[in-house]
Image (tube, rainbow, N blue to C red):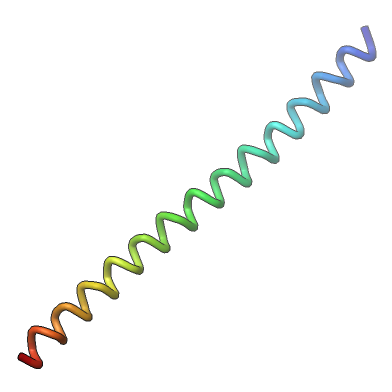
Amino acid sequence: MGNLVAFINSFISYLLVFVVFAAVIIAAVKVGITARHKKDAQNAQSADAQE
């Protein structure tokens, strides 16, 4: 029984680390996409102003 509890504890610990890494990666991708959209919009505005 003690081995099962240790296994479940270890499993939950690694699962929590995985969830945190996944959340950080998802947040970074969203920030990157948002920044790229803003940069593209600025470039489009400056291209329109030059014409």
